[in-house]
Length: 402
Image 1: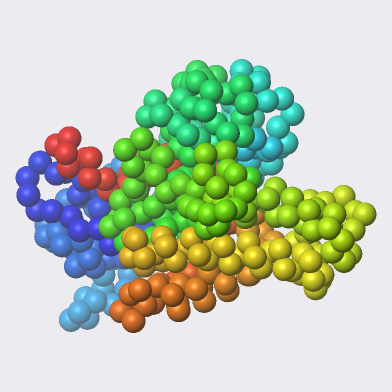
Image 2: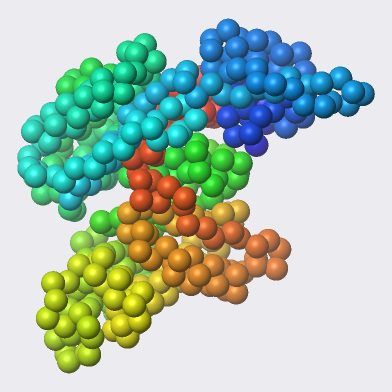
């Protein structure tokens, strides 16, 4: 839980701290907010009164208090605001309409049929507007559109040398989408967006520091350190997929060899199965059209080749996860993203065992390893949460501005 400050000129930050305290709880009183944030009861009362007036918070029943006096329970009004989240992947696009509690109300999935920037962005905007119209969301309650985009991204939302999107270098995707959709647009890479979604509406709502390992078409990561999202100098921190786990391994597009992504992404898993079949390995997959889903299904059915390849991928992810936890000393490691749909249980088991037995500080604290409950839609829900996070979350830059 973030702590507020009773120093002057920090009104916006304290308001965000109080709203966060309400948002992460399943009902909370003013007294409890003061206890958890370190703000005075008077400050809390003033802020809550304004949040009630703004319609962001509602009073919802009461609970017993000390001395027999009931305490009024506060909750975020989920209908106070909405955002559209878009996850743009080189192969598909996912759309989510979420309320202020981060709950996905509508989900849409579409393949990417044309890869040229202008028609793709126009289609993103058209689908987002149609989703809002069909859901009947009043324009005044639309806080904006969040976009989880392939990276790297610069601070202005321009895509820079994307490895899986030829022809998109230098595309100002944020400003293009904003022009076509007619709402403010917030952009981040898909892994950081997924981490923000987990912070806003998932497992990490009350966890100060956690790592999000994002497994999709590629492999990335998101970081929250001491309650603040960490993006790094160029806004592209936590490239978990480019930790070397096999120095003499296959070349990666980043310029290194044996990176996690080069060994463990869905395409790499399929390529490894194909290579071993060509060398004569026995498998029910022989002669079939190979895909990541097919390999995972075969592994679940006990196919020895598929099982060995997926287990090797899990072991290499675990090697990298141990290094990340040793470096950052976090409370929680969340595994999520579309590629977790079939392998989440295996990854949780293998990474959890490695973190429990090989992390240096394991005797001081047990690091929890969990699969995101919103794993398949993590980036789209996270994209919507980007809007809420930028609008309402307590951020240190609020203090710097004031």
